[in-house]
Length: 391
Image 1 (tube, rainbow, N blue to C red):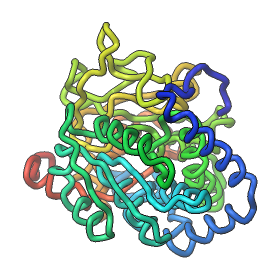
Image 2: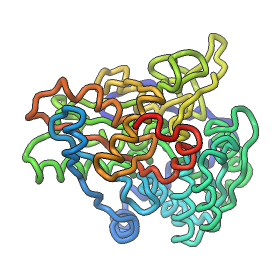
Image 3: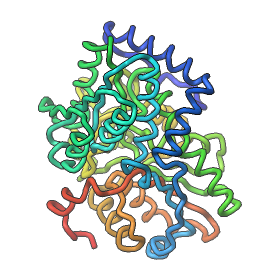
Protein backbone atom coordinates (compact mmCIF):
# COMPACT_ATOMS: atom_id res chain seq x y z
CA UNK A 1 0.00 0.00 0.00
CA UNK A 2 1.02 3.60 -0.57
CA UNK A 3 -0.36 4.63 2.82
CA UNK A 4 0.78 3.17 6.15
CA UNK A 5 -2.21 2.32 8.30
CA UNK A 6 -3.55 0.21 11.13
CA UNK A 7 -6.02 -1.67 8.95
CA UNK A 8 -5.49 -5.31 7.99
CA UNK A 9 -3.67 -7.70 10.32
CA UNK A 10 -4.30 -11.33 11.22
CA UNK A 11 -7.24 -11.66 13.59
CA UNK A 12 -7.78 -15.40 13.40
CA UNK A 13 -7.96 -18.39 15.76
CA UNK A 14 -4.63 -19.94 16.72
CA UNK A 15 -5.37 -22.97 14.52
CA UNK A 16 -5.13 -20.76 11.41
CA UNK A 17 -1.87 -18.98 12.29
CA UNK A 18 0.39 -21.79 11.04
CA UNK A 19 -1.45 -22.12 7.68
CA UNK A 20 -1.27 -18.33 7.25
CA UNK A 21 2.46 -18.28 8.01
CA UNK A 22 3.06 -21.05 5.46
CA UNK A 23 0.98 -19.18 2.90
CA UNK A 24 2.83 -15.93 3.55
CA UNK A 25 6.21 -17.63 3.08
CA UNK A 26 5.07 -19.35 -0.12
CA UNK A 27 3.59 -16.10 -1.47
CA UNK A 28 6.80 -14.14 -0.82
CA UNK A 29 8.81 -16.83 -2.60
CA UNK A 30 6.41 -16.94 -5.58
CA UNK A 31 6.25 -13.15 -5.87
CA UNK A 32 10.02 -13.03 -6.25
CA UNK A 33 10.08 -15.91 -8.74
CA UNK A 34 10.32 -15.12 -12.45
CA UNK A 35 9.21 -18.68 -13.23
CA UNK A 36 5.97 -18.27 -11.25
CA UNK A 37 5.19 -14.93 -12.88
CA UNK A 38 5.93 -16.22 -16.37
CA UNK A 39 3.63 -19.23 -15.84
CA UNK A 40 0.86 -17.00 -14.49
CA UNK A 41 1.29 -14.48 -17.33
CA UNK A 42 1.00 -17.30 -19.87
CA UNK A 43 -2.23 -18.53 -18.25
CA UNK A 44 -3.68 -15.02 -18.20
CA UNK A 45 -2.79 -14.35 -21.83
CA UNK A 46 -3.45 -17.69 -23.52
CA UNK A 47 -6.21 -19.06 -21.28
CA UNK A 48 -8.01 -16.21 -19.50
CA UNK A 49 -7.89 -13.78 -22.43
CA UNK A 50 -5.71 -10.89 -21.30
CA UNK A 51 -5.21 -8.12 -22.16
CA UNK A 52 -8.87 -7.09 -22.06
CA UNK A 53 -10.01 -4.26 -24.35
CA UNK A 54 -10.58 -0.65 -23.34
CA UNK A 55 -13.83 0.24 -25.12
CA UNK A 56 -15.07 3.78 -25.73
CA UNK A 57 -18.88 3.89 -25.36
CA UNK A 58 -19.99 6.92 -27.37
CA UNK A 59 -23.73 6.27 -27.42
CA UNK A 60 -23.87 5.70 -23.67
CA UNK A 61 -21.77 8.84 -23.13
CA UNK A 62 -24.10 10.90 -25.32
CA UNK A 63 -27.14 9.55 -23.45
CA UNK A 64 -25.77 10.75 -20.08
CA UNK A 65 -24.12 13.99 -21.35
CA UNK A 66 -20.66 12.67 -20.56
CA UNK A 67 -17.18 13.51 -21.80
CA UNK A 68 -15.26 10.64 -23.42
CA UNK A 69 -16.09 7.50 -21.47
CA UNK A 70 -14.24 4.18 -21.62
CA UNK A 71 -15.00 0.78 -20.13
CA UNK A 72 -12.24 -1.59 -19.03
CA UNK A 73 -13.72 -4.84 -20.30
CA UNK A 74 -13.08 -7.42 -17.58
CA UNK A 75 -16.45 -8.86 -18.64
CA UNK A 76 -14.71 -10.29 -21.72
CA UNK A 77 -12.38 -12.51 -19.70
CA UNK A 78 -12.90 -16.29 -19.66
CA UNK A 79 -15.64 -16.95 -17.05
CA UNK A 80 -16.98 -13.41 -17.49
CA UNK A 81 -15.33 -11.37 -14.75
CA UNK A 82 -12.11 -10.14 -13.16
CA UNK A 83 -12.23 -13.01 -10.64
CA UNK A 84 -10.23 -15.33 -12.93
CA UNK A 85 -7.10 -13.15 -12.45
CA UNK A 86 -6.95 -13.97 -8.75
CA UNK A 87 -8.25 -17.55 -9.02
CA UNK A 88 -5.52 -18.55 -11.47
CA UNK A 89 -2.88 -16.85 -9.34
CA UNK A 90 -3.91 -18.47 -6.08
CA UNK A 91 -4.56 -21.92 -7.55
CA UNK A 92 -1.17 -21.90 -9.27
CA UNK A 93 0.43 -20.91 -5.97
CA UNK A 94 -1.48 -23.67 -4.15
CA UNK A 95 -0.32 -26.26 -6.64
CA UNK A 96 3.28 -25.18 -6.13
CA UNK A 97 2.70 -25.55 -2.35
CA UNK A 98 1.67 -29.17 -2.94
CA UNK A 99 -2.02 -28.65 -2.20
CA UNK A 100 -4.53 -30.85 -4.03
CA UNK A 101 -7.81 -29.36 -2.83
CA UNK A 102 -9.10 -25.80 -3.16
CA UNK A 103 -11.74 -24.23 -0.90
CA UNK A 104 -13.57 -21.11 -2.04
CA UNK A 105 -16.50 -18.92 -1.04
CA UNK A 106 -18.72 -17.04 -3.46
CA UNK A 107 -21.58 -14.54 -3.42
CA UNK A 108 -22.48 -13.64 -6.98
CA UNK A 109 -20.94 -16.91 -8.11
CA UNK A 110 -18.25 -15.32 -10.27
CA UNK A 111 -15.40 -16.20 -7.92
CA UNK A 112 -16.81 -19.69 -7.52
CA UNK A 113 -16.95 -20.19 -11.29
CA UNK A 114 -13.46 -18.74 -11.72
CA UNK A 115 -12.03 -21.00 -9.00
CA UNK A 116 -13.78 -24.10 -10.36
CA UNK A 117 -12.42 -23.21 -13.79
CA UNK A 118 -8.86 -22.74 -12.52
CA UNK A 119 -9.08 -26.05 -10.66
CA UNK A 120 -10.28 -27.86 -13.77
CA UNK A 121 -7.39 -26.36 -15.74
CA UNK A 122 -4.77 -27.20 -13.10
CA UNK A 123 -6.14 -30.59 -11.99
CA UNK A 124 -7.23 -29.65 -8.47
CA UNK A 125 -10.26 -30.70 -6.42
CA UNK A 126 -12.67 -27.80 -5.74
CA UNK A 127 -15.24 -27.15 -2.99
CA UNK A 128 -17.26 -23.90 -3.08
CA UNK A 129 -19.35 -22.57 -0.19
CA UNK A 130 -22.31 -20.39 -1.17
CA UNK A 131 -25.22 -18.98 0.79
CA UNK A 132 -28.55 -20.55 -0.13
CA UNK A 133 -30.04 -17.10 -0.79
CA UNK A 134 -27.27 -16.38 -3.31
CA UNK A 135 -27.64 -19.84 -4.84
CA UNK A 136 -31.29 -19.08 -5.62
CA UNK A 137 -30.56 -15.75 -7.32
CA UNK A 138 -27.41 -16.95 -9.10
CA UNK A 139 -28.55 -20.36 -10.36
CA UNK A 140 -26.70 -20.15 -13.73
CA UNK A 141 -23.37 -19.85 -11.90
CA UNK A 142 -24.24 -22.71 -9.55
CA UNK A 143 -24.92 -24.91 -12.58
CA UNK A 144 -21.60 -23.84 -14.16
CA UNK A 145 -19.60 -24.67 -11.04
CA UNK A 146 -21.10 -28.14 -10.82
CA UNK A 147 -20.54 -28.71 -14.53
CA UNK A 148 -16.87 -27.81 -14.00
CA UNK A 149 -16.58 -30.53 -11.36
CA UNK A 150 -16.84 -28.42 -8.20
CA UNK A 151 -18.81 -29.46 -5.14
CA UNK A 152 -21.11 -26.54 -4.27
CA UNK A 153 -22.09 -26.54 -0.59
CA UNK A 154 -25.23 -24.58 0.39
CA UNK A 155 -24.82 -22.48 3.54
CA UNK A 156 -28.06 -22.04 5.48
CA UNK A 157 -26.70 -20.30 8.58
CA UNK A 158 -27.17 -16.60 9.35
CA UNK A 159 -28.34 -14.55 6.40
CA UNK A 160 -27.30 -17.38 4.02
CA UNK A 161 -25.24 -14.93 1.92
CA UNK A 162 -21.55 -14.18 1.35
CA UNK A 163 -20.62 -13.47 4.97
CA UNK A 164 -21.84 -16.90 6.02
CA UNK A 165 -20.13 -18.62 3.08
CA UNK A 166 -16.81 -17.09 4.20
CA UNK A 167 -17.39 -18.43 7.72
CA UNK A 168 -17.88 -21.97 6.42
CA UNK A 169 -14.87 -21.78 4.09
CA UNK A 170 -12.65 -20.71 7.01
CA UNK A 171 -13.93 -23.61 9.13
CA UNK A 172 -13.15 -26.05 6.33
CA UNK A 173 -9.64 -24.64 5.89
CA UNK A 174 -8.87 -24.88 9.60
CA UNK A 175 -9.80 -28.59 9.50
CA UNK A 176 -8.05 -29.53 6.24
CA UNK A 177 -4.94 -27.36 5.95
CA UNK A 178 -2.79 -30.43 5.27
CA UNK A 179 -4.08 -30.79 1.69
CA UNK A 180 -6.23 -27.69 1.13
CA UNK A 181 -5.74 -24.04 0.22
CA UNK A 182 -8.43 -21.43 0.87
CA UNK A 183 -8.72 -19.34 -2.31
CA UNK A 184 -10.27 -16.18 -0.89
CA UNK A 185 -12.05 -14.26 -3.63
CA UNK A 186 -11.63 -10.63 -2.63
CA UNK A 187 -9.02 -8.23 -1.25
CA UNK A 188 -9.94 -8.87 2.36
CA UNK A 189 -9.33 -11.40 5.11
CA UNK A 190 -6.14 -11.87 7.14
CA UNK A 191 -2.70 -10.98 5.76
CA UNK A 192 -1.36 -11.93 3.20
CA UNK A 193 -4.70 -12.25 1.37
CA UNK A 194 -5.38 -8.52 0.71
CA UNK A 195 -1.82 -8.06 -0.56
CA UNK A 196 -1.96 -11.20 -2.70
CA UNK A 197 -5.31 -10.42 -4.28
CA UNK A 198 -4.28 -6.81 -4.94
CA UNK A 199 -1.14 -8.05 -6.71
CA UNK A 200 -3.08 -10.53 -8.88
CA UNK A 201 -5.72 -7.91 -9.79
CA UNK A 202 -3.31 -5.01 -10.41
CA UNK A 203 -2.92 -6.22 -14.01
CA UNK A 204 -6.20 -4.33 -14.62
CA UNK A 205 -4.74 -0.89 -13.83
CA UNK A 206 -1.43 -1.71 -15.54
CA UNK A 207 -3.24 -2.45 -18.81
CA UNK A 208 -5.64 0.48 -18.42
CA UNK A 209 -2.77 2.94 -18.01
CA UNK A 210 -0.96 1.65 -21.10
CA UNK A 211 -4.11 1.37 -23.25
CA UNK A 212 -5.50 4.80 -22.40
CA UNK A 213 -2.15 6.45 -23.10
CA UNK A 214 -1.97 4.72 -26.51
CA UNK A 215 -5.57 5.62 -27.41
CA UNK A 216 -5.74 9.22 -26.16
CA UNK A 217 -2.31 10.37 -25.03
CA UNK A 218 -3.99 11.46 -21.79
CA UNK A 219 -4.33 10.30 -18.23
CA UNK A 220 -7.90 9.72 -17.01
CA UNK A 221 -9.69 12.46 -15.13
CA UNK A 222 -11.95 10.10 -13.20
CA UNK A 223 -11.89 6.33 -12.60
CA UNK A 224 -14.88 4.51 -11.12
CA UNK A 225 -15.27 0.95 -9.84
CA UNK A 226 -17.85 -0.87 -7.76
CA UNK A 227 -16.76 -2.03 -4.30
CA UNK A 228 -17.98 -5.17 -2.56
CA UNK A 229 -15.00 -6.78 -0.87
CA UNK A 230 -12.99 -4.58 -3.20
CA UNK A 231 -10.79 -6.72 -5.46
CA UNK A 232 -11.78 -5.27 -8.84
CA UNK A 233 -11.54 -1.73 -7.48
CA UNK A 234 -8.12 -2.10 -5.82
CA UNK A 235 -6.78 -3.75 -8.98
CA UNK A 236 -8.24 -0.96 -11.14
CA UNK A 237 -6.90 1.83 -8.90
CA UNK A 238 -3.47 0.39 -8.02
CA UNK A 239 -1.22 1.92 -10.71
CA UNK A 240 -2.99 5.29 -10.47
CA UNK A 241 -2.74 5.80 -6.71
CA UNK A 242 0.49 7.77 -6.94
CA UNK A 243 -0.98 10.23 -9.48
CA UNK A 244 -3.00 12.64 -7.37
CA UNK A 245 -4.44 14.31 -10.49
CA UNK A 246 -6.55 11.21 -11.19
CA UNK A 247 -9.81 11.12 -9.24
CA UNK A 248 -10.65 7.64 -7.93
CA UNK A 249 -14.18 6.70 -6.82
CA UNK A 250 -15.38 3.42 -5.35
CA UNK A 251 -19.12 2.77 -5.44
CA UNK A 252 -20.87 0.71 -2.77
CA UNK A 253 -24.37 -0.77 -2.68
CA UNK A 254 -26.90 1.76 -1.39
CA UNK A 255 -29.60 -0.91 -1.55
CA UNK A 256 -33.10 0.25 -0.68
CA UNK A 257 -32.08 3.01 1.75
CA UNK A 258 -29.21 3.98 4.05
CA UNK A 259 -30.91 2.40 7.02
CA UNK A 260 -29.98 -0.66 9.11
CA UNK A 261 -30.32 -3.86 7.11
CA UNK A 262 -31.28 -2.05 3.89
CA UNK A 263 -27.88 -1.50 2.25
CA UNK A 264 -24.22 -2.59 2.09
CA UNK A 265 -22.48 0.82 2.11
CA UNK A 266 -19.80 0.34 4.73
CA UNK A 267 -18.44 3.89 4.48
CA UNK A 268 -21.92 5.39 4.69
CA UNK A 269 -23.11 3.42 7.71
CA UNK A 270 -20.17 1.46 9.08
CA UNK A 271 -17.26 1.85 11.49
CA UNK A 272 -13.87 0.20 12.07
CA UNK A 273 -13.91 -3.30 13.51
CA UNK A 274 -12.81 -6.88 12.91
CA UNK A 275 -14.47 -9.36 10.56
CA UNK A 276 -13.11 -12.45 8.82
CA UNK A 277 -9.57 -11.97 10.01
CA UNK A 278 -8.84 -8.29 9.41
CA UNK A 279 -9.41 -4.87 10.96
CA UNK A 280 -11.41 -2.76 8.52
CA UNK A 281 -14.71 -0.91 8.06
CA UNK A 282 -17.86 -2.96 8.56
CA UNK A 283 -21.56 -2.61 9.28
CA UNK A 284 -22.01 -3.33 12.99
CA UNK A 285 -24.28 -2.25 15.81
CA UNK A 286 -23.30 -0.50 19.04
CA UNK A 287 -22.39 -3.87 20.57
CA UNK A 288 -20.08 -4.91 17.70
CA UNK A 289 -22.57 -7.38 16.23
CA UNK A 290 -22.46 -7.65 12.43
CA UNK A 291 -25.56 -6.12 10.88
CA UNK A 292 -27.58 -7.64 8.02
CA UNK A 293 -27.07 -6.20 4.55
CA UNK A 294 -29.06 -5.85 1.34
CA UNK A 295 -28.20 -5.30 -2.31
CA UNK A 296 -29.83 -6.24 -5.59
CA UNK A 297 -26.32 -7.43 -6.46
CA UNK A 298 -25.15 -10.59 -4.69
CA UNK A 299 -21.50 -9.64 -5.14
CA UNK A 300 -21.88 -6.37 -3.20
CA UNK A 301 -24.03 -7.86 -0.43
CA UNK A 302 -21.29 -8.09 2.21
CA UNK A 303 -20.94 -6.26 5.56
CA UNK A 304 -17.20 -5.47 5.40
CA UNK A 305 -14.70 -4.08 2.90
CA UNK A 306 -11.05 -4.84 2.19
CA UNK A 307 -8.53 -3.09 4.48
CA UNK A 308 -6.81 -1.31 1.58
CA UNK A 309 -10.07 0.52 0.91
CA UNK A 310 -10.46 1.40 4.59
CA UNK A 311 -7.01 3.00 4.50
CA UNK A 312 -7.67 4.80 1.22
CA UNK A 313 -10.95 6.14 2.61
CA UNK A 314 -9.29 7.51 5.74
CA UNK A 315 -6.41 9.00 3.74
CA UNK A 316 -8.87 10.69 1.37
CA UNK A 317 -7.09 9.37 -1.72
CA UNK A 318 -10.18 7.47 -2.87
CA UNK A 319 -13.73 8.77 -2.50
CA UNK A 320 -16.42 6.21 -1.70
CA UNK A 321 -20.01 6.80 -2.79
CA UNK A 322 -23.13 4.64 -2.99
CA UNK A 323 -26.02 4.18 -5.39
CA UNK A 324 -29.37 2.50 -4.86
CA UNK A 325 -30.74 -0.73 -6.32
CA UNK A 326 -33.07 1.26 -8.59
CA UNK A 327 -30.24 3.48 -9.88
CA UNK A 328 -28.04 0.46 -10.62
CA UNK A 329 -30.87 -1.24 -12.53
CA UNK A 330 -31.42 1.90 -14.60
CA UNK A 331 -27.73 1.91 -15.57
CA UNK A 332 -27.89 -1.81 -16.37
CA UNK A 333 -30.69 -1.26 -18.88
CA UNK A 334 -29.20 1.92 -20.38
CA UNK A 335 -25.80 0.40 -21.18
CA UNK A 336 -27.46 -2.72 -22.58
CA UNK A 337 -29.73 -0.73 -24.91
CA UNK A 338 -27.12 1.85 -25.94
CA UNK A 339 -24.06 -0.34 -26.48
CA UNK A 340 -25.12 -3.99 -26.69
CA UNK A 341 -23.07 -4.70 -23.55
CA UNK A 342 -24.89 -6.42 -20.69
CA UNK A 343 -23.10 -5.49 -17.45
CA UNK A 344 -23.11 -7.36 -14.17
CA UNK A 345 -25.29 -5.76 -11.50
CA UNK A 346 -22.12 -5.11 -9.49
CA UNK A 347 -20.59 -3.09 -12.35
CA UNK A 348 -23.94 -1.36 -12.91
CA UNK A 349 -23.39 0.47 -9.62
CA UNK A 350 -20.23 2.06 -11.02
CA UNK A 351 -22.03 2.93 -14.27
CA UNK A 352 -24.84 4.53 -12.29
CA UNK A 353 -22.43 6.80 -10.46
CA UNK A 354 -20.92 7.80 -13.81
CA UNK A 355 -24.43 8.75 -14.98
CA UNK A 356 -24.80 11.04 -11.97
CA UNK A 357 -21.53 12.93 -12.22
CA UNK A 358 -20.57 12.87 -15.92
CA UNK A 359 -22.44 16.07 -16.92
CA UNK A 360 -20.31 18.05 -14.42
CA UNK A 361 -17.07 17.30 -16.29
CA UNK A 362 -15.52 19.22 -19.19
CA UNK A 363 -15.80 17.62 -22.62
CA UNK A 364 -12.01 17.20 -22.84
CA UNK A 365 -11.97 15.10 -19.67
CA UNK A 366 -11.85 11.29 -19.70
CA UNK A 367 -13.84 8.93 -17.48
CA UNK A 368 -12.99 5.23 -17.19
CA UNK A 369 -15.34 2.71 -15.57
CA UNK A 370 -14.21 -0.79 -14.68
CA UNK A 371 -16.76 -3.19 -16.14
CA UNK A 372 -15.83 -5.91 -13.69
CA UNK A 373 -18.17 -8.58 -15.05
CA UNK A 374 -20.94 -9.42 -17.50
CA UNK A 375 -24.59 -9.73 -16.61
CA UNK A 376 -25.50 -13.23 -17.82
CA UNK A 377 -25.56 -14.43 -14.20
CA UNK A 378 -28.11 -11.75 -13.25
CA UNK A 379 -30.64 -12.17 -16.05
CA UNK A 380 -32.96 -14.63 -14.29
CA UNK A 381 -33.02 -12.47 -11.17
CA UNK A 382 -33.72 -9.29 -13.16
CA UNK A 383 -36.38 -10.85 -15.38
CA UNK A 384 -38.20 -12.43 -12.42
CA UNK A 385 -38.00 -9.44 -10.08
CA UNK A 386 -37.26 -6.26 -12.01
CA UNK A 387 -38.30 -6.92 -15.61
CA UNK A 388 -38.27 -3.76 -17.75
CA UNK A 389 -39.07 -1.48 -14.80
CA UNK A 390 -36.30 0.91 -15.67
CA UNK A 391 -36.20 1.06 -19.49
